Amino acid sequence: MKKASTILSLLFLGATLVSFKGYPQYQTQNNHINIYDIDLIEVEEELELGFDTAPYLPEGFNAYAGMETTLDNLGLVEIEENIDLGFNTKEYLPEGFNPYQGMIFAIEDIVVIEEEEEFILDFNTKKYLPNSFNALSK
Image (cartoon, rainbow, N blue to C red; front, top):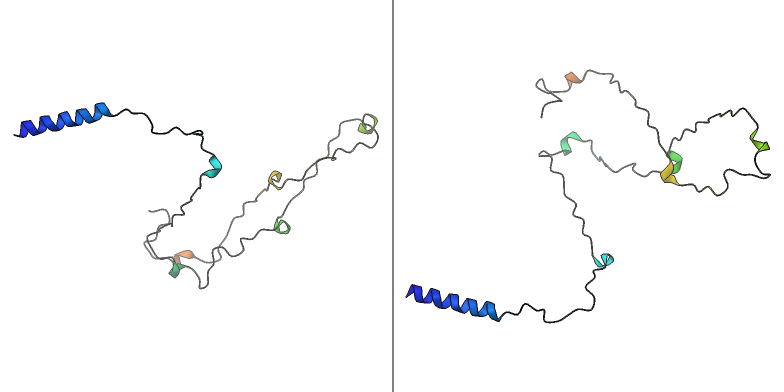
């Protein structure tokens, strides 16, 4: 009985697969996807440190305080370079020549040089840390 039901179900499955045409029911005029029609969803994952950071931070601590940057706060250092070509360039340039004409200021082209500072603490940190504390251990 099992063999007969298995054979009948295989025959039914075969007949179903043979009758399947594999043609789409309709044709679309435009199969192109416009990249601007796709909505990008960014998932922000929370960083789990495994311990509560609140006891280690001062009261009212705001990690984003002072993050606003203005151009006035940038400490830009302009280094003037004196180039001596050994001759007067005005003799070879047209009258009214302006080498800076048409230059566009772009903030992205500014190179900021950060000077590394060494921090010296005026107290012994071992007094405030546990005896078994090791900053290099995991």
